[in-house]
Length: 477
Image 1 (cartoon, helix red, strand yellow):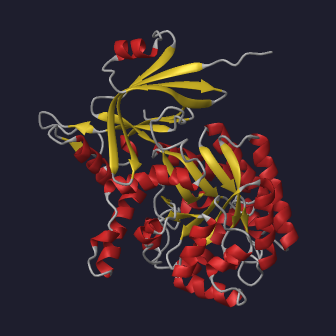
Image 2: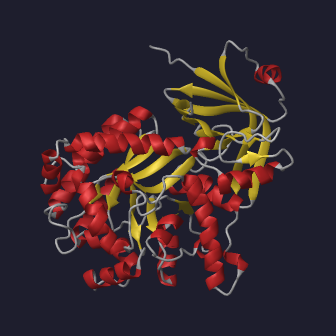
Image 3: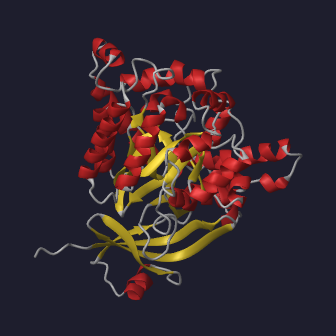
């Protein structure tokens, strides 16, 4: 019987995390990571260790046994961000939305771009006429969005793809090869009254057939779903026939799959759902009736929900992805995050590219803070709505882990957790010479203040290295 090689890594320095909504944990010491079959997990920690020699002694190893990584004095290790809502094919349109709101933005910008990354249909033919093979274009876009999100410290992403099975499979293959933890969903759209004829499944049978084909391919890449896994993805209720929604719910239950979709993002969208599904009592009821609300469901936006809908989501233990930048960019409204949390609903953060203008989860963290203050203002200045830096970081890490079904496995520096981590470097200022990067540290700031400065001023230039499952997947040169 073949033996499995085990490789160890030793990380030294400062480790910062947000294990609770009001708990910024700052620790100095060492972490020993063991990688077996590509899954690097935290084997041991020591928070009394001051140097390499002490760490080797504490872990009873030699420097020949491990690869050593040391955070710089002005840097720290931080859990990788978890983006619970991002549209991979829309990345070329990041920052392009004009004055549009959700529904006209979809028809003007989004559907044509997504269709151009497929392998069939008028948009694909147009792409070919311009000298591009559609899947070659898709490969360029997907390669870039994976690399870019990793460079911003996003170790896990829940991706919407397109309706194209080959293009969706390509996204999964690229994420698997590059090493990003990813949940990949082939977008389902088959409602003849709301979907463009150039970008639509013809029947519910075709929707289920194509969804199944993509699910099977992704599972063949990673049978255990440890790194890359399929996620059932009806785009949103208006894009799908009632039969398709119900059959997608059955498909998810049959294979115990994650589900992702949109809900109550825009007031006009909510009205459209009422018109399309008059037999249902609410947007949430449409999904609940189709068995699409489960503990493994991620609902993006959730801005305009009634108390009854919130209660249903809580009962079904479904999750919310808060996308503050997108909600502001498209003028959709303010998600009542505090109310959702108080109701016992798990909430995370998403960039929602390209409704959101940036793939940076750090930007989503600060936008969550800013939007919460605006929500407090429109509620009479009530500070209870405020989300601070620590809570927003918690939403972007631990909250994300809860929402993708990885609670206790991602988001911190606890023995047994996966090593999905970013190394952050800040810039010390000395002799009146600016340091490199966007965050200047003068030396008198506390570490809590340095974390605040990173959140409000930082970007990908601060991300020095990124690991997923112990594998180094990004390094800033």
